Length: 186
Ligand code: SF4
Image (cartoon, rainbow, N blue to C red; front, side):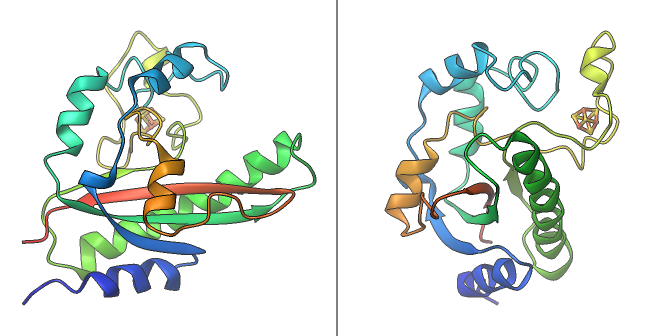
């Protein structure tokens, strides 16, 4: 039976994504300079996590991996915070976003026929209190549950959101996190 893309979108909305749409991988801009932003370490995760640079792999390799898929489900969660400097609020919002991302992932794994997929989340993997990358780069404890970030792949999220009619600004004192599950349709 043909995969109903609209059902995937609805499944994301039912699991509390605020916005969701199907994106073609041809609509994605991969920007190597975004990886340079990672190297500047503004988020303090560079070199601390298997799902972030440099542990996640070189840009060109990741881009090629993403382009093996024709399309993906893109979704966004939106959260109210006290101000644009509210780091605590942003951190708490990510703690709300991640379980939503995992629920949508579970839907793909258990309720669809999709066999090949590439899930990308927002930011570093926070599954373990301390990533094994920090311990002499010991192997990841949960490779099936650790998802690289859209940032590590150099994906231009704002341009993609514009292309698929998802708002990239959700109003004053909000923070938005995204996820994208690239998948093979048959
Ligand atoms: S699952 Fe744990 S060890 Fe693996 S990338 Fe995530 S935090 Fe690191």
